Image 1 (cartoon, one colour):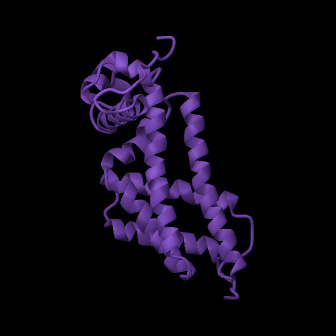
Image 2 (image 1 turned 180 degrees about the vertical axis):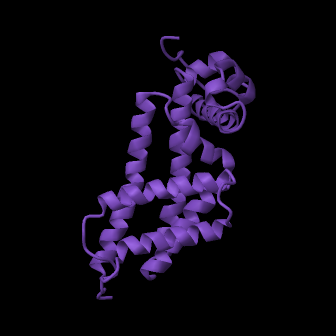
Length: 219
């Protein structure tokens, strides 16, 4: 297929063309979460199998997407968006709390969201890897957003006198790599700990980065 098919316009069954399009797209993404995030996985899926799982036709698939890679890209962004929304909500709720309390709330919100569905973990940490240069660029760009979130929190903490004032970009990138690795390994059963224990360890690591030995805060 060289491109997406043209979509019908007008109302049908009480729904506008835009509403029908949004519903179809949601059904394809829901089906992709199952097929890509469980069995058979992205690399074994086909347009036909995805369309069947969504209860839609292949023609309708090409009205919404060009390739299965487009579906994976959209799903990866959606899964990350869910996690980001959970973290931002936790940040708002943690306003005025100490750095340690804020960090704990943030990572509990992130971990709870990502691990609520094992398929989300597989999409974020497994299926997206090595698909294409385009998706690798998307994956790194999305990770950069998480790095910037950590840096922003670090800068704010430093301004409050709760963290050492310095450039946290490298430390934040290394820390996000640690978060991704331990969450994936925990979900795979390779870390013998509860999720709360994993989060507590991540919080200790972050606080160690923000408050290195010998540093005395002003807050």
